[in-house]
Length: 141
Image (cartoon, rainbow, N blue to C red):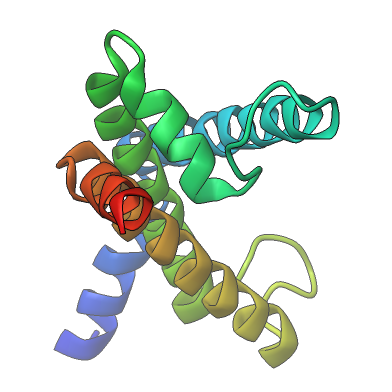
């Protein structure tokens, strides 16, 4: 076995580790939380009870404003990071199943990895308080 094959095998095993699977599950839960909050905000906007925009930034701001919101955002960020790594691993090594190594499946996983990376960055931004400050700066102008 060459060193490149050895590194490839080690990376593939790491991509299937219980820690990464746990992070991916946390990320899926975080994605669900975001969808629920966006839905609630959309209903509030529709019925004229809240002027916040029903988008991921509005959802992040809503979470940040609640007690324990910063901790929740950091947990969500960890989950989104796990999802991104999981999708990047699928892009590199292929997905499970008989068609998992097709180029189209790998490209789809790569795109999802980029998407989850952007959610990670957005979530970290709000967790650090930067996202909320940007939003309040916009309101004051």
